[in-house]
Amino acid sequence: MSSVRAAEREMHRGEHEDDERRRQRKLEEALEVKSLRRIISAYLNYPEAAEEDVRRYERSFKMLPPSHKALLSHYPLKFQRLRRAYNVDLTVELVKLRILTLCPISRCISAIPQTGVIGIKDTDVRDGPHLERVSYNHDVSGVKIVRSSQSNSTSERMHISNSDQACCGEGSSAVCSSPIGVTTKKEVNNEGHCDSITERHTSGREYNREMHNCDRNDAIDSNGDVSSPTRTWLDPSLQLHVPLVDVDKVRCIVRNIVRDWAAEGQKERDQCYKPILEELDSLFADRSKESPPACLVPGAGLGRLALEISCLGFISQGNEFSYYMMICSSFILNHSRTAGEWTIYPWIHSNCNSLSDSDQLRPVSVPDIHPASAGITEGFSMCGGDFVEVYNDPNQVGVWDAVVTCFFIDTAHNIVEYIEIISRILKDGGVWINMGPLLYHFAEMYGQDDEMSIELSLEDVKRVALHYGFHFEKEKTIETTYTTNPKSMMQNRYNAAFWTMRKRSAIATEQATP
Image (cartoon, rainbow, N blue to C red):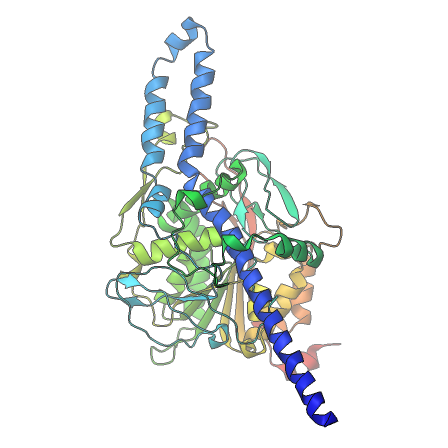
């Protein structure tokens, strides 16, 4: 009899634990929706914020004495041109095409050319580069919920609110805020400069409080179910008035579009991407279409480098942590029907360092190529999630032939952990190609004292890499810019570190270790 009671107690305990897990998952998804709602609202607020800028310009102009106004009689026309520019900007098209209908959690977006578009599919993060082929039509409605079969409830989260990974405004010293979490401050003292990426990693205490306070009505219906992917995010009742700094992140995305998807960004791509592509092409000269090598691109941003690697004949997977980036990359990859289809005005948001009004107001056509017609290799994908959480999975060990990092490794809280994971996921003999500076994004943190920022010199980075089994094959410095207006009077440049390292076998590493 006692054994029956014990079994009943165990059964009830299991049911209670299952209920608690379901409740926790629903609350987590509600928090994701809450964060995503704020990000989408930043896109939706973009025209309104631009209008406020123009009103500010007009107020200043009205303060001028008549004689000064006469000297600047063309300014009212400039204000009209600014209004026309931001009202036909690509971000407005993002709203018109209603592609912001996203589900709270996305893990992997498989991009495979089919019927003229690159489509989105659900996949398990453990699939690595080996993804199934799937048919798509032109109606790509959004990203569905995908869970890592290895993850627990905490690591499953995309941490949207914790990693918006967007940039502070141009020509400013801005503090990028978040609903929750720790904020980092990076000064941006050059126009169009987007290397200041703000991330927030929430402590467990802060996260639990936010979960407790999360409004379930934001994401969960009367049946306790998380809203479906067809939720109408554009319903005015769901839109938020977000801080202008959130809209600055959207403006940063617009400048990233120039870098990745415009002819005007070709010079930067030649400086940053071309050396990587040439190195991959040389190192894998004998690659075959039947068994293409697999290449991972952490911090893939808007996806151009990952796509170019795919076009070289690699199974390429981009990994991105920022929903600001993912919304825009999904738009370009999945909704572009032809090259030059969209127009943006990336430089209208700052009057500083302009040679002329025409330079400031010049339109830029995007994309410069049609992604679905670029000749990508089957298996090209974009995986959403934190690099550490996604690729620390045991099923990722020894999966990749190459890892490419471009302006990425300094986004780490712990760069040693990044290097360790890169080594772990590479096959023996695999290569790590890196390009970028060491502008550590958490170097000036404001918030919780227990937040980590490990800021190594380049010399120490090399030493850590050697410890984890790498040896150098090539190393040099490359001068480059990042999302810089090529016609601006102010040009900030990096002397970026470029290297190729190869992972030794475990036996060779043990022999080389003193």
